[in-house]
Length: 80
Image: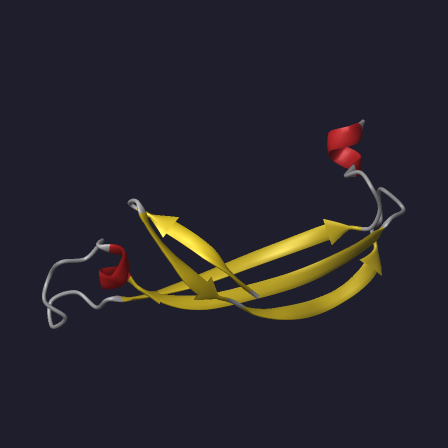
């Protein structure tokens, strides 16, 4: 999945590797619930965040997002 990420006023495209973790019936809300993991790595220097030499502080930033999504038009615990 590719999209734009903005940090400190700098916008650059970032590509996340997305893994589908499976789909199960939620035990409380009786709706299908799907899980995903998204990972990416960005260079903090490209966003103007890290100006220190590489030997002092590395520029690679690893991002990991864990997400679950309900099937349907509404999220049960926000709709009640």
